[in-house]
Length: 135
Image 1 (cartoon, rainbow, N blue to C red):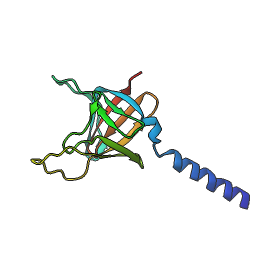
Image 2: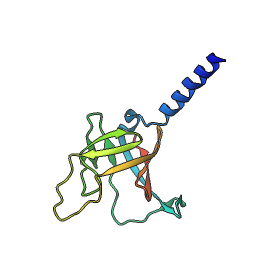
Image 3: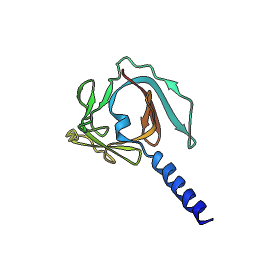
Image 4: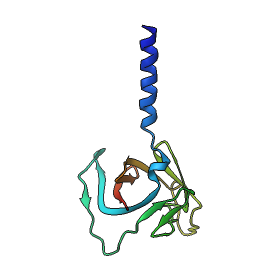
């Protein structure tokens, strides 16, 4: 009986580790799908294709910890920085853009909702966007 308990404890430990996103999986360039999802009454609504007159730039996560938009440093006011780290399924940004006329509520960070070899879904508490890996 004791062996079974130890084996179950080990299995539970493995499952909880797998839920954390490996920063290595994030490395690479991602292209926007122009699909967005909003929370409605605490639940995610349908994916909606957004129409915009401007192209949304590709984003890129480098092994060096650099974050790029369209191949250039990616910092934007209250949205992202030029450097990133991943911890507990969250991307935390640093090396932020100086925005004296803006008052940001919190530091820029994105939650990773999905990450596999082809799809990245990132966002905040109320909205999220879908990207596909650039080959």
